[in-house]
Image 1 (cartoon, rainbow, N blue to C red):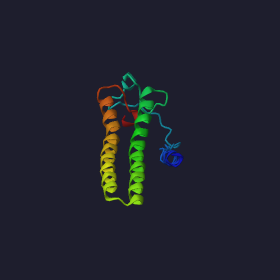
Image 2 (cartoon, rainbow, N blue to C red; image 1 turned 90 degrees about the horizontal axis):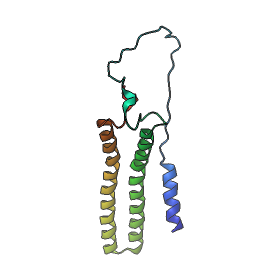
Image 3 (cartoon, rainbow, N blue to C red; image 1 turned 30 degrees about the vertical axis):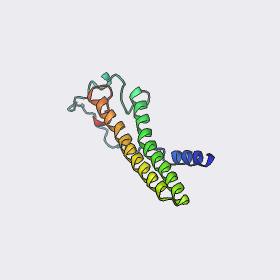
Image 4 (cartoon, rainbow, N blue to C red; image 1 turned 90 degrees about the vertical axis):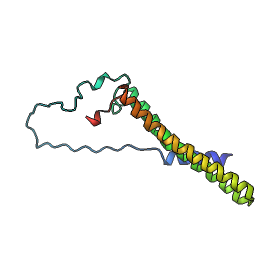
Length: 137
């Protein structure tokens, strides 16, 4: 049991997404200008949950949780499926192998669905105006 927990925790720590941002600053462009909002982003702060790129908003937290679900779901499905397959191979029983394969396929389908649910959720939240993404502006 402790080996399974160790494997799951290790895989979680290895697959945690890390955000790295690089910004280019052009100091030579010191000419003042007037910004015209052609994308109609002036009402960007009107979303209920806030902006996805603002780390103090609820939308940012929701997006982080959804990103973790996208990574952890398929990872756990693959790890558990691999453990079942190894058990079936060790016992070398055809019936156990078929059951393990069937479970593995079902877990992969569930993982694929779990991968797309957060994406669909974030799209729906932005469509209904509950969150915004200032990066698109």
